Length: 193
Image 1 (cartoon, one colour):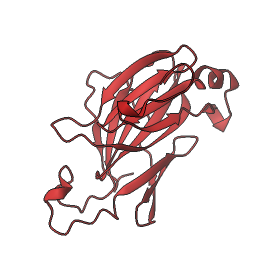
Image 2 (cartoon, rainbow, N blue to C red):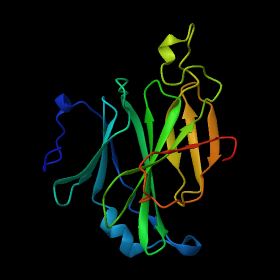
Image 3 (tube, rainbow, N blue to C red):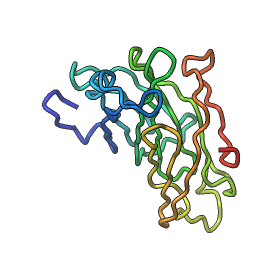
Image 4 (cartoon, rainbow, N blue to C red):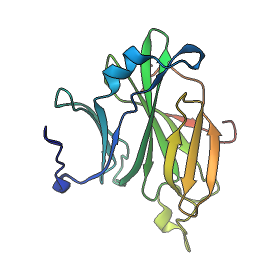
């Protein structure tokens, strides 16, 4: 992405999402001061399964995170965000939907740090065999896989739409410390959400 706003398609960019500037504070009130600091952030997904946090105001790439390791890169289809007040700072949660993957990745970054943390993996199709390699399944249909995920403004719920039009509503887990010792994601069980 250049300062003028043009995107070079040769970089493999498949999804661009502006971080929502609405920060929900205590009691569901909108925090207008925090909204200004995050409004210039853009999240970029590419065909290799990498997410990049970009500050359009400063024209600076802040962080980059590869979500798919082990030779199975997946194109990023959808990115959604929600910002909330947490302890003495603000957090922005991101949901990432990838092509041919039943797993939705949930990431977060603190507004004053701008480092992406991978928090959860949410398998929205737990009955599918071989979720990491769906091509190995005979007669595999991709209609049940997620095509879009949207976080509620207060980060309490996640709405997942599949390719067949089915809509699922999940309750999000409690906010955890994104700066914990390990960056290994927690496998969130949809039955407990």
